[in-house]
Image (cartoon, rainbow, N blue to C red; front, side, top):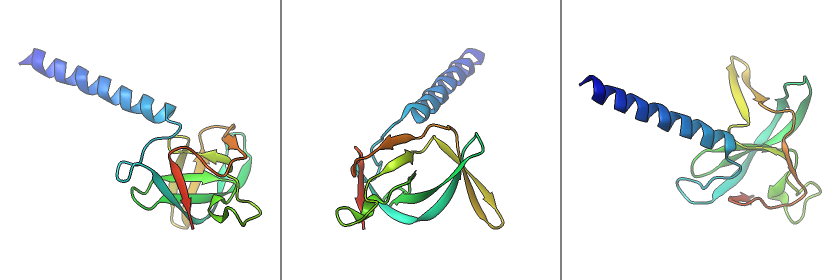
Length: 128
C-alpha cells in the first residue's frame, strides 16, 4: 500500500511540475473552449513592474474561457485606430493579480514584456 501511495504521489508531483513549466513557458495557447482566444477589451489597468516602473495597458479577456492578457496597444480598433497594434504585451503566467478592497492590482513577473508592432498574435483574435 505504501508503494502505491508513493507512486501516486510521484506521479502527481511530476504532473504539477509539468503544468507549472507549461504555464511558465507558454507564449500562446489554444482556448480550451473555442481553440482560438477571442479577445474583447475590458478597460485599462496600470501594470506594475518589479523595477518600480508602471505602464498603462489595455486589459483583454477571452469571451469563451476568460483568459486575460494585457497590451499597450488597442488591437480591437484595427484597421481604423491610431493604436491598433499590440505593442508590449503580457500573457497568463507573466503577471499576478492582487485583489484589494478598492480593486485589483496587476504586477508583472518580468521587466521585459513581449513586443510586437503587429495587429495579430497567433492563437488570438481581437474583436470589437
